[in-house]
Length: 577
Image 1 (tube, rainbow, N blue to C red):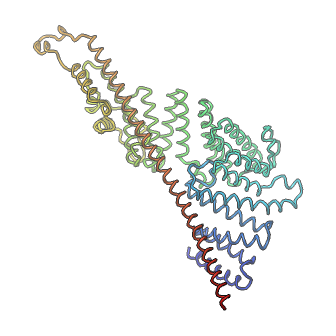
Image 2: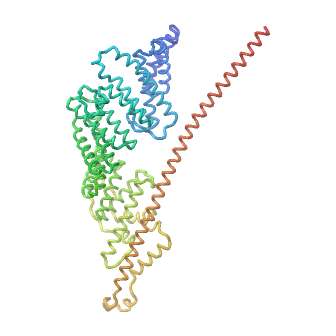
């Protein structure tokens, strides 16, 4: 940083010297300003760098004209910096083509300026390619890159038609004619490899706009171009030829899921998993850590399990969820991983569907504790779902005990007193065993206000349920008097017991429904609060921008009025002289 600051200071001194000798509008001054702009952007001062770059662009336009290659390079540099600032303001990657929601006027202005600069950069490049032969002009990668970036910005803005038109021009510049794309026959082999990336971004764009059929078609074209590139030994500009199939298959799978084509979705996710394993041997160590780590593999395994659950293949889904947990626990910081409680939630759901209630209670209890340790708020949808499944497992287990034992017990009393334990080996991690003791977990969560089955029931319902339970556990007076004789002489009518058990089941079901309604209301309230806060922040940003514009206009008007007054006073003074 110190060397960079020293270089900037030296370049500014040279700029002042050149300005004094050659004037402000000189080629040397513009070159020095461009160097200063690059140094400032490298140091993180992108706003100051853009100011110097904009001044250099204006100077180059007046000195060299609008067709000079240096002007085109300057415009591309400034537009790239604007894209970087947009990425920082929206917390999204630069290469992400997905439409952004709730864009502020500041981000929109930066997007518009980036589009203007990219358009200014096209004329020098078009002039450059005009001196080449027709065969050499079939592939114009620099023009294709610019239209590619223009399409990506339009996609982020939500301008679907403009983005598709820009992508079409990028295809033609990369050597893939649009007519051949529409007909489905791409016979050329000298096209630019980045055409595959454009197909993938088109798939993302169609998926974001709910055009799932077009998204699947774009994913198929992406895989077709990738196979051609592999056979020709080519790679894309950012070495994503190995990672692109992984992302493409996942987008196709998500599109199949939206169309309720779950078997196709499962096959696409499995294809993504095979591509992930295939790419491990061909990527560098840095890319392997970014794309092919344990988290990425566990995410795909979990998606396969969820897709199998939609096909009602519970046993197969359980295998993939357990594999995802086994892969994830191999990492050193598995307890801090955000994916871990989600996988436990899915495994608990599977245990509940398979009526393995003891294992479901263990896994879901660990899931709830991990969410709490990671600071996830209680109104989060995943936390609410985990608690709901835990309640379901408790109620199902208590109903099973009522049917299988001679004496009836309160469901919460049974679980808090101690429930049978079973070993769940998938919860073992290298860092230690997650808290899975059902006795402690059930007793703790039963006393918690979020887990109690009687939380949302009315007082009358509680009294009715308690009276029924007391009647079931209460011994008859005749049995107390005849303690030395067999109790078989005064049996409790079986019809009454069956009726009371039916009433308990009905009340338990009503409790679960009321609890679910309360949780849905909490989630909806949290969503409404978040949406209102986003609207307020957007309105405040727009209001601040409008206030700035109004203040600038007022200052301009005051300057004009003062200038007129000074001119009139000068005229009167001249007349007086």
